[in-house]
Image (cartoon, rainbow, N blue to C red; front, side, top):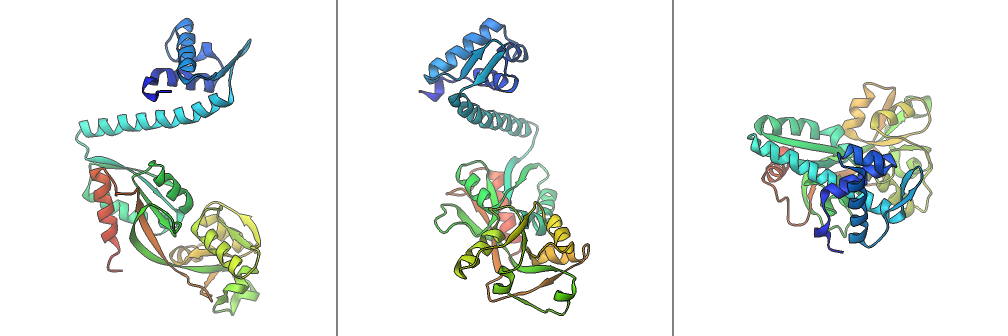
Length: 301
């Protein structure tokens, strides 16, 4: 199959069928006659040499191959739409667009303020930012689906190009209950034996704790997984367990919820948060400018 023989209008028509379950409705939405739409879909199947749709009296449903094509076609449509937006920005005097993906720790800690300062100095740049786990950031960058990423502890075999961004420290966050009130620190073995409240799997802290548990031949007792540091703090305050947070985040949340933070003994709690980009560095000028700015943002701190 030659991908250059595929045309975007046919792919968009196919996606409309996937959404509606009807060739008739898809043809109407695509401003095509039913016969023309059917012919386009048949030609698409012929070019791919596989059946994409199972037609029946009430409409059409995707075959297994059709579901795969729909998934890829969504990505192609998104990229084409994004390209159109970026070209329009440039034609109107904009100076570029950056696709930035970042882990939750950086978004909760330093990234928003750094981006505000960058955009103040580069008013023509647009940034499309999304939050993912560090593991997801690494994978999406390797797939070429972002220009820059912020992550912690990539895999040792990673092909990404990394630059140091800032350093942080993780601490235990515990409820303000009698059992914890007089404590000054918590040992890592004790922490690993507690009921834990953690973010979704794939986050740097969750992976760090899982590695430590394997080293100690222990099994993590994860009682609750939640999305967002605020949710973790509220669950800890309710006495459901303890968690581990970046220190800068714990300091802020301790002012809002009845929790306290304790340094962790027996483990390296200092971390380097990195700026990552695909091998060879970012190709677009705006992304290179943002990379240089973020590299300098905390160099003296």
